[in-house]
Length: 102
Image (tube, rainbow, N blue to C red; front, side):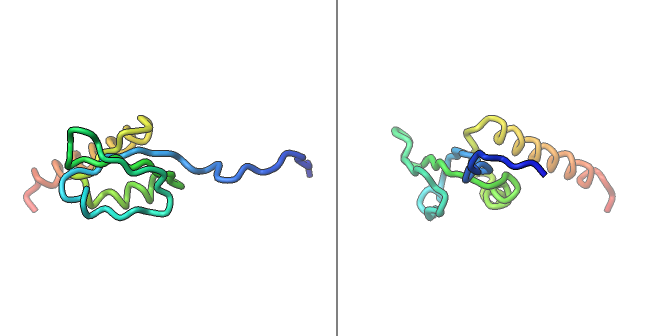
């Protein structure tokens, strides 16, 4: 067994994400414990940007899935692209079902 004399880093697994809320969600949104900043976007009264720390993308994606049209991930780009992959996968899945004779 090897001993490590370096202290463990807390919150190493946290990822900082920014996303925009639009439409009615702007007014319905309630602050979450890991929200770092909530700010209104100037010149756009129906848009609010939230910056939050998340533990993993699975639970974050699951939380915002109900708000597809009213929630847009801004950064980091890697998280935004991973979410886009999920949306594309859903589109492909439903095209298959749409063309079937079920």
